[in-house]
Every structure is written in structure tokens, then in C-alpha cells.
Picture 1: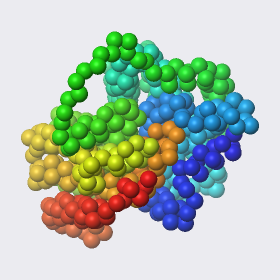
Picture 2: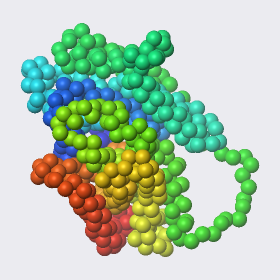
Picture 3: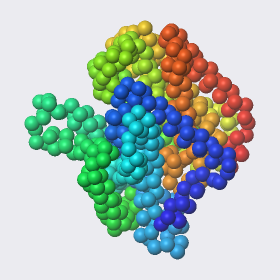
Picture 4: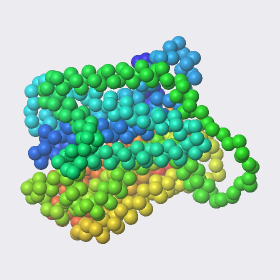
Length: 516
């Protein structure tokens, strides 16, 4: 089991000092980015709330990614037939897939909780037992959301695989599940002391949502009973999940990977189109053919749109409260409402530009790359098309959200509700393309390797985090007084950096042929 797991992760990152150094840099940048956010909460006197809050964020993130990726991580990998011919028992192969799935989700929890632990330790100086306790709790954090997400995602893939419009139904299913999770999270957070507090159903939902956080918080504070309950319960749940999955693995795998063909197919005259239209149509077909690709990229853009829309409807103060930043605390620290409005363009840009489609647009080609290179079009044309997909998907939505906020929340910084997200979306798209050309993953056996676990995706995400952190660090480090000028310089700087990166990419001829 461990040999198969190690072989899997070795295939993700070929040995090489340069690649390992780059991955180390990405990890450091990511930890620093998350740590900056946690440290900011510590500075506001909320250090004791940082680990529970980041535990909640890790749980939510793991649940979402597990739902979208479980059917690809656990089932449908291309080299299953090859692995079955190896001298390993079938149950060993299944166990290795479960371990790979768990480790992949554990990485997200580690990136969030390790900085949270560091901030907690820095401000509160806990006793020695805090450190081994926190480390053990880190390893059980993704267990429950992994199991729930795997069940929901695999069940959805299993059911929709039987229908002709399976992909469309799968998208609808994902939307319904995500909407239910968002409503459940919001309702459970608002029902205490409200009109629904006495309802048995909502009381149960509130208890269900708060129990893991309470167990985690109490365990981190030294409660041995809660610690044993959380650890023991997680181990038993994971063991039961592994045993049950081992019994149904091949049946579910066959159902998910089987393809339905039409019996009434009719040959029709092919439509003709220009090179650009044909290429962009191909890119959109590849994109929408993979629910994992769609939700791994556009999910955060939807979050940005929801934050912007909710901000316009509810107002800045209410949104800050929902995000765990009570306005009263900010006012006490000398931050005005107009200054708070300054951060909203960054908040929108952060979510909208964090995960561009271009970060894996070359990798997802896989074995199709040879056909793409053989087309009678220039590499620059191919790159423009791949950038266009990202901009078409992200820019119109965020422009509408920004205009809505300009009307509903007028401030000194209103124009940047549109300008800053747009600038960062363009920058992240070009950056993602450049990094994916530098660090492609073409020999993937499961598309989750290219979409979720490749070096280019990690590098793009966390370099984006660093780019967002730079102007905020400059603001506080140098005590900038003209915040409007900083927003203008940041916006223009993002566009200028995107232009420089695009010039470098365009000047490098023959890169796609080198990858064959």
C-alpha cells in the first residue's frame, strides 16, 4: 500500500533539485500568506479563536474538494488495469487509493492549521503538551469531511453515470449540494437565540455543525476526554469507510467509468468555423467535460460574486460580522468604515483571481498535446485562446458584481470594485499560463493529478497569494496615508506585470514542441 502511494506521489513531481526547490518555495510562500492572515487576527486580540476558525475553514475546504474530486481520486484512474497486473492484492490497490485521497486532502488542512498553530503559540505561549496535541489533531482534521465528501461525490457520479446527460446532471447535483452546504452553514451559524432555536430539526443541525469544532477546541485546550473522543471517532470512521469502500470498489468503479452511447446517432454535415472559434470551442468543451476542472477553478469566483452581492445587499458591517471580523473590534483599533471599504476590492480580487483556469490548461491536454501542436496555428494563438477562456468565465461576472457594489456601497474606492479584480484576474491568468508552461503535468493517469495536485497549480495559487499580500504589507509596514494612490498603483502594477509576463511567454517560441 505504501509503495503504491509513494510511486503515485513520485510521479507527480519528477526528481530534480530545481523542481524540489520550487516546490519548497511555493510551500513557504503559501504558509507565509496564510500566516499573515492569521497573524492579523492575532494582532486584533483574537489569537485564541484562530485555530478553531482555521479548523472550520479547513473542514469546509476539504469537504468541497472531496465532493468534486473523490470520483476521480478514488475511481476511474487510467492505470488501474496496469496496477492489477502487479504483484499486489486488489485490496492493497484500493487501500493505496484511499491513502492517496486522504494525504491529498491533508495537505490543505496542514497549510491552514500550521500557520494557525504558530500564531496561537506566538501570542498565547501555551504549555509543552499543546504542540503534540495540535499535531495529532491536524492528522484527523480532514477525516470526517473526506468521508462525507467522498460519499456525496461518488454517489452523485454513480447515479449520473447511468444517464445520457450525466455530465449536466452531475453539475446540477454539485450546485444543489454546494447550495445546501452554504445554507446549512449560514443557518446553523444564525439560529442560536433566533426564531429557529427551539426547532428540533434546526437544533439538531446546529448541534451537528458545532460538535466537531467544540471537540477540536476543547481537545486543543487540554480536555483529554474530547481529545480521545475526536481521535478515536475519526479512526473508527476512517477504518469503517475503508472496509466498506473495499467491498464495493470495483462495482462502483465500473459504473462510474462506463460510458453511455447513443443508439439514434445520425451523421450530419460538419459546421465550418474560423481557427479562433474552433480553438475556443475546443477549450470550452475540454473545460466543461470535467466537473472537477470547473469546480476547482470557478468555485472561488462564485464565492467572490456571493461576497460582493451580499455586501451590496447587507452592507459592509454585516458582511464583516459574517466573516468573523466584528466592525466594533475594527473601530476600537482606529479603522473607519471608509478604510474598511478599501479592503473590499482586495477581497473580491483575492477570491476571483486565486485559481485561474490557465494554471492547468496545458497539463489537461495530456496526450492530446501532440494534436494541438500539429494544428496549423501559431503558439501565440493557442495561448491567447487559453487566456480568453479564463477571461470570458471570470471578467463579465466580476464586472457586474463590482458595478452592483459601486451603486450599493459608494465610497472613495468605488471604482476599484471593478478595476482591481479585473486587473488581478488578467494577471493571474497570464501567470497561470506561464507557470503551467514551465511546470506541466502531461503524463497524468487521473485528471485530478493535473487539476488539483500538479506543481503548477500549487505554484500559481500561492504566488497569487503573495501578490495579494504585498500591497497590504506595504500599507502597514510603511504606514501609507494615501490609500487611494496605493490602490491605483496596485491596479496599474498588476496590469503592467501581466503585460511583462505575456511578453516573455510570447517571445519563447517552440515551448509546446519541447513538451512532446
